[in-house]
Length: 422
Image 1 (cartoon, rainbow, N blue to C red):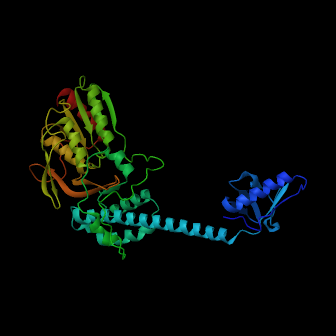
Image 2 (tube, rainbow, N blue to C red; image 1 turned 120 degrees about the horizontal axis):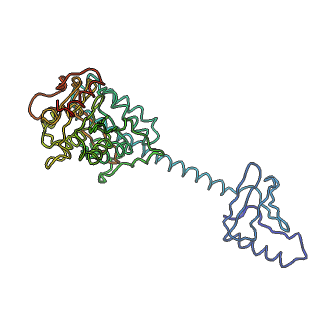
Image 3 (cartoon, rainbow, N blue to C red; image 1 turned 90 degrees about the vertical axis):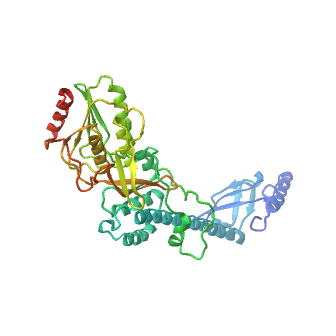
């Protein structure tokens, strides 16, 4: 960019001919090779920089004076050239275009993820009536809310709210960070459909859909701060030779890990175990199978699911000796749901545990995890948990061996059963 104005450089010291010649030579070079940057703040020229140091200077003179003054020299500036304004306008247009394209891509990716989550329920939810909820209307309502979403964490909150419309206390959508924390890298199923099947729904534009291979759609960035687990932490105490372990849920991998650690630490001197499931809302069938595998091995369940029929479900692991074979009492009440009911029922049916408390809720939908490409997970209730042989616990619950309503007496009865053998 050539310097504005006439580009004349006059010496205020006419006696110093050499200095004048150097400045003239500088200006000549500037005319041909110098790229100047003029920064205007209000009506003032703030700074001019050049690759040739002899004309670099800074001043605070008003732009209207048209002069950049420095000791011993002055350079006529004049107003910024047309090329400068044009360049700035094109830079602004370019940035706007880039930002618009990025926003459009994010909106498309958000819409695709919403369609994936919505269709999982539409095609895999165990109740084809969706508990009386108009799932098509729910989808339309949440598509309209996409315009308010600004990032991936916000999108996953929206998807979780959408699953909450089912009001089944089971189905959920986890962001990648939540899935890592709660599922601990547990296995999940791939989406049962292709992205191309959804693109006409989420991108009704004349632009043809991409034919590129499937790949993660703009992976979600990690959250600025890790969120806390919504579940109560597992609790353990060792008293009178009995390990009392409270397991608050069957989602968080921390519970299984803490239970295994407790058994490794105390099994050699323990007389037995009390597994407190009271108030446990359940969770994942894979976590249920892992906890059961600590105390027993076999195939104690089947899942009656939509689209897949009845599938046998083994403990994890299936073969070998369990981690402990000491006496076990399980505490239950009416607030035990889902996979927690399946855990208690399987241990009872196998003769592995003695159950004390109240009949469980009889709400045994089985959650199946489906993986999104970026690590997010949809937990969909797509089946009902049942014993391998016999009727399902759905609507009936699991009956205790000893009915006891008082919470404190339940625990005391459990200790008596282990310590006295009754």
